[in-house]
Image 1 (tube, rainbow, N blue to C red):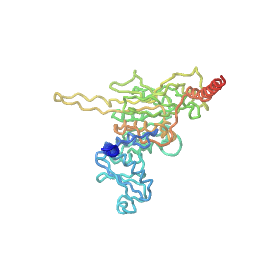
Image 2 (image 1 turned 135 degrees about the vertical axis):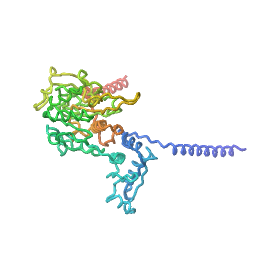
Image 3 (image 1 turned 60 degrees about the horizontal axis):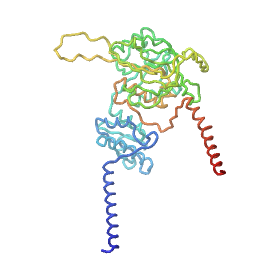
Length: 467
């Protein structure tokens, strides 16, 4: 065999070997399809909430995305997003792209009047997503999997925040977030209603600035004793108006205002506080890795001396090490913040919220029962107290992780732990939180250290060349 023949055979075998390896790799990749999202906020991947929702579907769901065939960009984006849902649970979620012009009867059946809508079908149930967007689709899946609507009543008559309107301090966006996850918000005046409605899932007391009348206090206490669920948010102006409630449940909120050096990043006085640490063993904040923002918040902490028997209380969120508190009286009625070192009450990590469970009502009376029979379960009251109302205001509700924290609180209060998670990402920018010390260090590094290092390197190189 000549050298030329051996070279030809060697070349052919190498090509066949390379082709075989390529085919094997191709087969393995088709059977093991994995994607890596290297973007900063994982914008091309589903959030943990979306993954949990689609994987927990009780019945198969088919998504019908109505998009014109001529709209290539929208169809490609829809195919990518819906494909992510299908990849997460292929046996529970399927989809198809439908051109409403080519399938007018199907579009009419689901009352689709314009492209861009997605209809989720599960048996005889349907839900509509008005856009091909992760948050819209996940909320529609939540509504589809849980048709029971939960009622949330916002107390009024004591200076609480309004739940409607575009005012920055109103709670309209918070109420909109509740509606998107199957809650229905309504206003409740206890003097007019005389009692908490039987269909109430949660009562929200959002920043009262006036004292409740004794009759209202008794009504709210009686509801909690029967297993009620309460979210109470405080303000500096709340003063001691809620001490009658907090002290009975082992919670206290000193008359202090939390300030934070990290507020300088907002170009304002240090009236904002950033929560950086969370309770790792509580369902609300387990695996919660987002910063949350509060404004003129009060400390909220557990009072061990007044904790009821059988209660379980846990601080949920703490500020970072650069926070400190001053007496609330130093800020109330003032036009600007004046910080005096002799007025600082505490420094460092300060608790911002507390969650607790309490045995509701008196223990059931003992009665003869067969040996080994299970005791009847007692209802459980749940309370979350937050030292600030602004974190759910129109201005701050969608900032950082505020929305996730607030919605997790509501879902925990209603025992919907399967909905406690991180929600779809906002593709907008996220600020970098730096303390005053860190900012000064960066300035020194950029303005002095680096230029001096460059100049010194130049002088050394010039000196060596001359030498």
